[in-house]
Length: 194
Image (cartoon, rainbow, N blue to C red; front, side, top):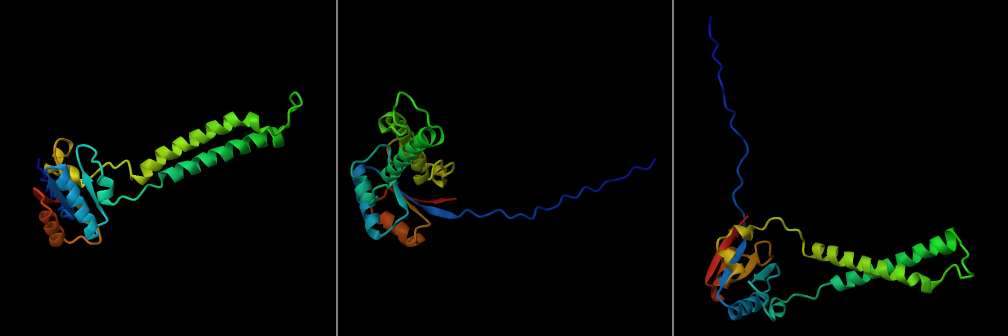
C-alpha cells in the first residue's frame, strides 16, 4: 500500500496589527495645592477635554477646572412635569371622558381626588429622569478607559493626584502639552495610549 502525503500549508494571516494611538498625557502631582494650581493653569491655557483625578473630593476643584453647572435639574423638572401631565391626562381620560361613572354625585373631573396619582407619577418620572439623565450625561457605563493600563495611575485611589489631557482636545500637541504639564510642577508626565 502506498502512503499518501498531505501537504499542510498554513495560510498567512493578512490582517495587520494596529499600532497604539496616543490617547493623551497623564501628569502626576503629589498634593492638593499643586493639582489645583495645575488645573487652573490648564484651564487658562484653553484646553477643553481634560480632567483631574484624586483619591478624595477636592474643595474648589470645579471652579479650578471651569466646570459649568449641569442641566440635570432642568431635565428632572421636565420629567416631573411630564409625569404630572401624564397622570392628570390618564385620569381625565378614564374618569371624565371614556368611562363616566357617577359616584355619590361627585364630579367626573375631580382634581383633589387626582392629586395622589399625579404626585406619584411626577416623583416616579423625576427619579427615572435623574437616574438615566445622569448616566447619559456622564457617558456611563464606560466599560473601558485607556488610563487603567497605566501603572502610575493606579495610585489615584491611594495618595496621588493627576491631571489628564485628552489627545482629542483641539489644542493638544505632543510636545507643547507635555512641556506645559512639566512646567506646572508635575512629578511625572506620562503618555498613555489606546
